[in-house]
Length: 257
Image (cartoon, rainbow, N blue to C red; front, side):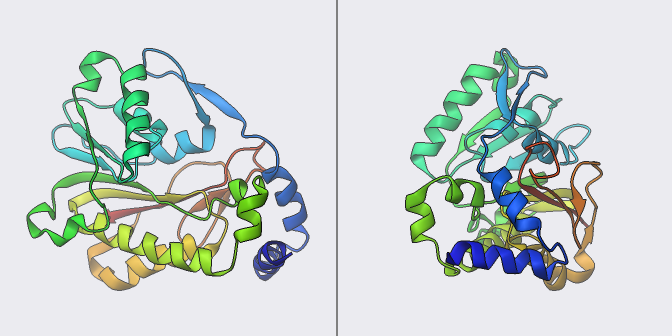
């Protein structure tokens, strides 16, 4: 099968021979969710790896705006919102259908006073920085980018049959457009977290490398400081075969100089 051949080669190239079989089996298992409850009106069930990724964003001590650039279904926005002080959060989602779900999640789980601090928007995050007035607007940006989501591909025969190697390449281009825009939206000293649920390095470290190469002295790596998972060249990745079913989640963190 083309999909298996592709990912088998990736993991062999990364000197993890024999890893793909175990990882594939773990991906076919159901998500192991946890109830996230911090400062919410009721629990929201989500992958612990997603909680970890959202917590990596360095929030401003006071004031300013935070952007969750691709926020649906809303779990990571809840994690950020649960730690807001007098800061505002923009939870953005381009898809109207997914945006409706995002609103429902925020309304159902956030206390009224916290909910007032969260605005839902529907712009294309990859294009926002084209408006120069928006550049430097945010103190922190979380970009949980659309990705290959191999777990979902493996669990749906229709998606698996339609998969080709062109898919991760196409998505990496979209991710780069989103990440470069997110960087330009940040103020000096701002925190940027880039995450995906992809396995393919071209969607993870490959996109991070583009940011570091393009902006050079204007950006610095701020390595994520969680213990779970394994180190990559520019971040960390949590994989379900060795992390008790969590993930996949890749996280890279940057600071604007």
